[in-house]
Length: 62
Image (tube, rainbow, N blue to C red; front, side, top):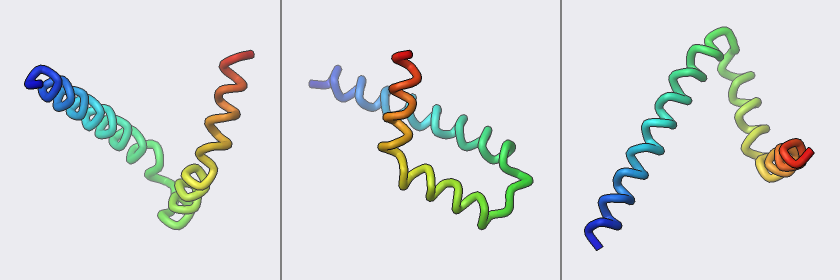
């Protein structure tokens, strides 16, 4: 049980580290995009996540 708990904590820490890296890259990549535009882009991506995943899956299988 302790091993599983340690593994879960390590996995969570790894995910948090990856998200922090992604955040840092996005901050620099979007410096010139106005907040309103950025919010629209982010909303679009999250609203269409299922469709985006389907499209990406099709591209990987080709």
